[in-house]
Length: 111
Figure (cartoon, rainbow, N blue to C red):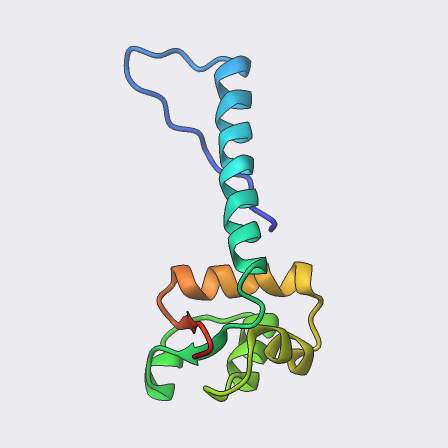
């Protein structure tokens, strides 16, 4: 998952140091790895769009996210949706994670 560079915030009593920035970056990388691993375990889960198509127009979605939304029919698994969208598992899970975080899609285990 790619993350844009972001400004690190420090408490008033904490002076920013290279070490504290590295520790924070490592913690974020571990969190991202856990999220991605959790999504990979759900490749057989069904992708559901959680908002109306009208509401989707309010969100500035990139090409990959739009392709995932277009491929999700409420019956297809995440693996099938990513295949239909033309995305690899690696790049697709990052996009699905972003869509989940935005509240636009949900994953539901097959019954």
